[in-house]
Image (cartoon, rainbow, N blue to C red; front, side):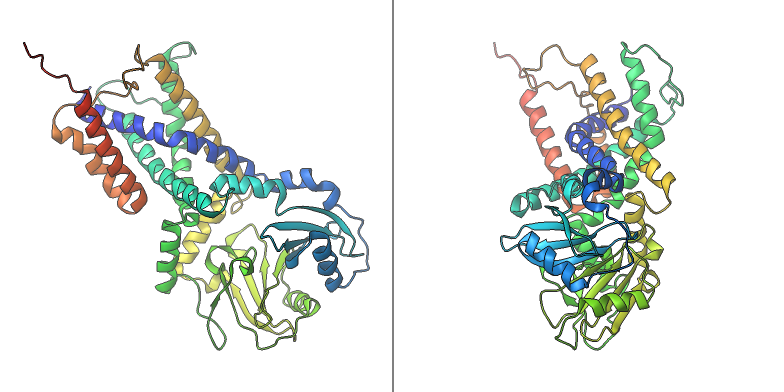
Length: 441
């Protein structure tokens, strides 16, 4: 076994130790979120399903009853794609919490109230580790960014270890079928990594736009360069929305901004009529800003990125101030949005969802097989800071060969690069402390 191979194996081992627990959580929650529509329908069926009717209550009654039931201000509502489903109203409460209120659009009767988004929103927040909110949520989101970067390291080193050489090692089919032996788990680990590693790498890269540091920086750079959000189509400019006024469902490119409105009167009925007149397909979401001089934002809830569309409507006159579709996005925004929709498993239909699910299942197979392999070759004593990692090869050239290859991959992700340098220093310090000392006679 060459020194370079041992060095790569050592880094692959440590990357797995650092990444796998979090990556398995992301795979579990991400795999569940692929089926968010089915989970939502199962969990909230009694509140969602209503009797279809030709009559429709006034939209003002929908949000009025929802605000009363939710104990706050109606901030957005989603009109369903089917007449036998309830309207969903997001209600912002004075204590900062949010509720989802289901309202029968035919009678304005409230059919149920749940915490904002219900089960699927909890899964989503677990996936981004933002469930706790505040500084803790921010720190955990940064951790996810580091994990995504290390996943790239894990995939790159894993491919190197699998790559065919003179020795036997590159497998395309399993050579061993005895589950009690380590070679079986080695073959399983290698094959899963080979066949779904590309999907895992894709998920790691396309998940980065949501990250707290890298995502914000890239968003700013793409939009500032003219490759992202289109310029404001009316006099004035895009305005940054307050936290709870972020347009719901606006997507990565248009999130966080609103347009000013020349009118101060508000009429939800006029806004819905304008959306219907523009043939905006349902379901769509109407965001109701807290400030009266801000336009309503109406966003189509679509499954393919090319169908993305947002209307900005004067709430008094029902005049459409802007109609922004995917064709107006810059090249950078189009690429990132395409990656996001594919990441979520909707861009290419059922095959897209199944491929993303295969990546999630593959993460768990890699984690379990890696743990079993470690257990079968673990050192006899773990009390001496011996984790069973491959030994560091001698010589500075070999020791620093892998970081020299990996660090350029991490320059794109500074937090990952910083964590990599930290691990390098810790590894160096640990080897110095564990180095056998000469016996003094």
